[in-house]
Amino acid sequence: MQAFISPAAVTSCNRPGRRGNRSRPFAAVQLAACALALPLMAAPSTARADGFSDATTTITPSGAAVLTIDPFQTFQASSDLQTSVPSTFGGANVANIIGANRFYTNGITGQGSIVANVEAGHFWGDVDGHETLTSRTSFVTGTGALGDFDRHATWVGMMIGGQNGGQFQGGYQTGIANGADLRSGAIATSWTPPAYSLSFSFSSTSIFSAYQAYFGTADAINSSWGFTDTTGTNFFTTGLDGLARANPRTTFVVSAGNSGPGTNTVGSPGSGYNAITVAALHNDGSNNYNSVASFSSRGPQDFGGPGITVTGVRAAVDIAAPGDSLTSAFYGGTTGGNTGGAAQDGTNLYSGGLAGTSFASPITAAADTLLNSAARNTPAISGNANARDARVLKAVIQNSATKIPGWTNGQSTVNGVITTTQSLDYASGAGALNLNGAFDQFLSGGTKDVTGTGGGSITALGWDFGTVAAGSHNDYPFSVFLKGGTNLTLTLDWFRDRTFVSTSSTTDNAFRDLNLEVWNSTFTSEIATSDSLYNDVEHLSFTVPSDGLYAIRVSQAAPIFGATGPESYGLAWSGTATVPEPGAAAILLAVGGAALTFRRRN
Image 1 (cartoon, rainbow, N blue to C red):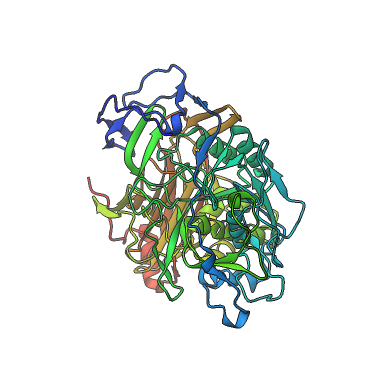
Image 2: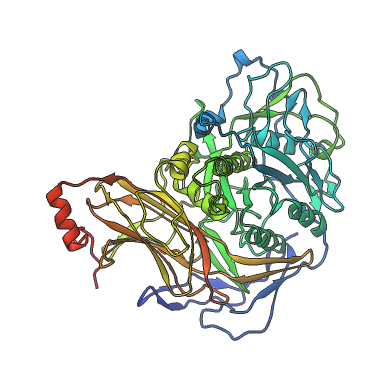
C-alpha cells in the first residue's frame, strides 16, 4: 500500500539569518513522495538554497480513493470481560489518576461543551444499561459510510463522556467529561474480515464529511485511528490539519499509534501538526502511570515539506496519558468491527485490561473538554473566546504536565544560554497529563490572557493568546520577582498553515518558525531559548538561576517554507513568585535584573 520514491539527492546546507548570526546545518534531506501513493503536486516556484519552496503546495489523492487502515489499539478477548460489583472493582480510576476530581469538586464536569468521537463506527449509546451518551441526537455518518455501532468506538466514547447506568451504578469508571454533550461520527465504508476486525476502509467523502460536521461545532474532537504517514504530508493528514486551523475553537486530539518503541513511528493524523498527539502511559501494576508504554509510538520523527523530507528532527508526541490496564463499557453486537463474529452481549459486561494510545487520546480530549467547560462557566473568562482557543488549551495542557522519570528535551547550556532545539521529549511530549496542575494553570489567580495580542506585563502563572508579526517579537515582562532555585516552565503552540479545499484537494501553504526565549528584565542577558526548526511547539523547563526580574519573548524568524505573515499562538507559563528583601529588591531594580548569573557570550 505504501509507495516511496527512492532518495534522489542527499544534501546539507546552512540556513543563515536565524537569531542574529546563528545558523544551523540541515539534517540529511531527501526527496520523497508522501505515504500511501498520495504525491505532492507543487506549483512552479523559485528554488531556495535550502531546497524548500515558497509556493503554496496543492496535495491531491491519486489512485484508489479508498484506503485500508488500522485503528491503533489492542483488542481484548472475551476472557477480559468483567461483571464485578462496585465493591470489588479494582481497576484504575483514571479521573483520580489524572486529577480530574479537581474540576468535579469545583462543579465542572463538561457541562455546556460538546465533544465528538470520530472514527470507524459509532459508539453504542446504551451498553447493558451503562449510559455512554448524554444526547441521542448526535450521530453523524460520513457520506458513503456504514454508520455501524462498533466495540472500539464504544470503548473510546465511554472514556470521553460515559455516564453510569444499569444495575451497578457508580462502581465503574465514568467518562472524564461525563457532563458534556457527547457526539459520534463514523467514517468506515467497509470492514476487513474476519471478526474482530481492526481494519477498515474509508473514502475522502466519508472522512471529510464527518469531520466537517464537527469542526466548528464541537469544542473537542477525538480520533483513535491512524495509518502510516511518518512525514505528516499525506492528503488526509493535511486536510485534517486544514480543518483544525480553520476552526481554532475546536481542539483536535489524536492517538500517537501503537508501533513503538521504535523511532519515527507516529502515524497520521498524529504525525500532522494542528492536533494534540497523545502517547500511552504504562500501568506499573499498582495503578501508577509514570512511564511510557513500550508499544507507544514516538519520535524523533521525519519532517515533510514541499518535496523534501528531513529525517529525525521532529518531536511529534505532545503529551502522554494513561493507556494501559483500563476498563470501559462493552459492545458485543454483530456490527462494525464485530461483523462476522458471534454476539457476546450480556448483562453489565465491561472490558478490562484495555491498552493502547486509542484510550490515552480520549482521556486527553475529555481533559480539554473540562478546560473548555471551565472557560464557559468561569465568570472572569466566560466572555473571552481566546480562553477556548485550541492553541491556548494545548499550551495549558502541555505546560501543566508532570515530567516523568527520564523525561528530556535535550536542554543544554550553549554560550551561557539554556538551549533546546528539540522542544519536547520524543516519547512523552511535555510529560504526563495533570489536570490538577491544569486547573491552577488555567483558572487560579494568575494572568488570564493579556490585553491585546502583542504581549504585556504578566504574573508568575498564566496564559495568553497572541499574534506575532513576521520578523518581530512580543515581550512579556514579569511584574513579580521569580524565586531562584525554583522551576520555570513555558510552552508556546501555533498551527502549521494548511487549508482543506475540498474532498479532492488540500494545500500546504507555509510553516512559520516561532521561538520562545527567557531574558532578564532589560533584555540584555538571555537566559534560555527553545528554538526547534521543525516543531509547532516550543517548550522550556529549567531552574531559575537566582531571584530576579525576568521576561518572556516570543519571536518569529524566517519561515521554514512558504510566505511570511503574522502567526497566532497560545502561550502558557508557570513560575514561583518571591518577595525579595527590601535592600536586595532595590539593587535588582536599579540594575534592571543585572544580578542574574547567566550571560550571553560572544
